[in-house]
Picture 1 (cartoon, rainbow, N blue to C red):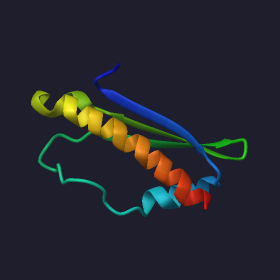
Picture 2: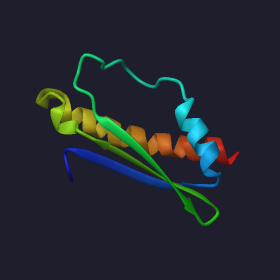
Picture 3: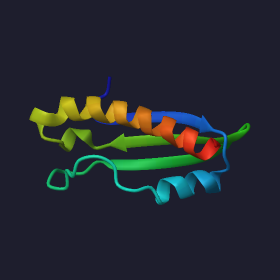
Length: 93
């Protein structure tokens, strides 16, 4: 398992414009870690049969302080899995 990258992909039953609106206008989630180095989160939206393929890539985790990195990776891995599921339910309904 890579310690520097998390990638999740889900196909949602919604057009790309609807998915982007849900991502771009979502409120803040989680604890404020603004004092720590940031990671880069990319959202890739591609047309897919019946909807849109959404790929979320978070990279740069190696910059997180070593004492918190493993916990952050576990939490972010679970968090992105939950968020892509939330997104699929939100835009498909």
